[in-house]
Amino acid sequence: MTDLFENETTTTTTLDMRRLQRQKRRAVRRRWTLVVVAASIVLVAIGGSIAWNFVQGLGGDGESGVADYEGAGQGAVRVVIEPGMSGAAMADVLYEAGVVASPESFVTAYTENPDAQQISAGYYLIQREMKADFAVDALLDPGNRVELTINVPEGKTLDTYFEKIANLTKSTPEEVEEVASDHDAIGLPEEANGNLEGWLFPATYAFDPGVEPVEILSTMVAQTVKVLERNGVAPEDWEQTLTVASIVEGEASRDEDRPLVASVIYNRLDDGMKLQMDSTVKYVVPGEGAFATSEELKVDSPYNTYEYAGLPPGPINAPSESAIQAANSPADSNYLFFVTVNFDTGETKFSETHAEFLEHKAEMNEWIAENTESTDEG
Image 1 (cartoon, rainbow, N blue to C red):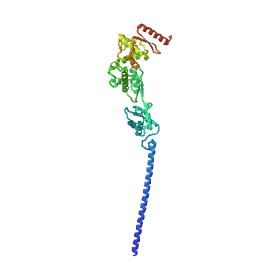
Image 2 (image 1 turned 120 degrees about the horizontal axis):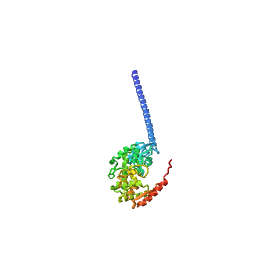
Image 3 (image 1 turned 45 degrees about the horizontal axis):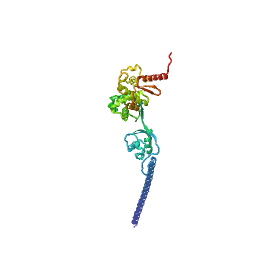
Image 4 (image 1 turned 180 degrees about the vertical axis):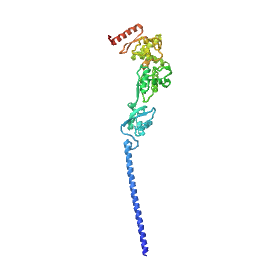
């Protein structure tokens, strides 16, 4: 019996111990579960806070979730807006450049701005990390455009153009001249008869960085065609009109005199007279002063209108639009002569007879004598 009770006691104790151990293990598991859950809640809360702060830092809309920067930005970056770009395409360019926080923010700002359609293609230097609204405004501001400008005044010859284009494109004048010889590439019309002189319109042009000489030359040729068409010059008259206009440009400094100078040219041509224009001689023997010297007048060239009748072979410079207008619509006059009697004001007098012309020429010589400094020798 004793043995029986002893075994029974041992068995009960063992069961209790196992039960207690299981309870302890369950308690430990519950404690770790609570720790893990609590840690997870904390991490989620921290993550949510970080995410919220990140969105807030971008200026994100808590409702839409679209990220946007605040303020006008900092640092500068160059972006290129290509011709025909949509607002969405611009958004991608700006986002990749770090200008806007998200493409969506720019698209929204672009859509809401009624002037956004006026954004033009080109190179822009704008701030990074800009609010999308400000980015749209920056692209609408011409002051942010990065441009190369070239200005050629009227009355200049090809040499001047080649030099200016070379300076702008980091080329040499010889390289520009070689490009200019490809008339198909620069769009020189057949009416020019292969002569580029006079076909590069004098004006101020703006180009994007990296522009090549061929683009500049073709733009200038296209502008000349545009001016001729705008003034109603028939294509078959383009070369003659530019030739007459270039002589007008070389002979008259005042716009009011140009139609009259053009009338003298046409009247002389109609009467079979030689034009006898110093400007045409100076084209082939350039030198100081507006008047051709007796030695220069001996040059054997079809541009020497003292020796050869009719118009020279082509333009002698790049004429302005006012000179083209005069050549296309000359004054109705019987004048055959003109002379500038005051080189300060450009005052020019016109005459129908040679005798009257000599009177005006004497007036010119008097002005020259009075306004030329004399020098004492010895």
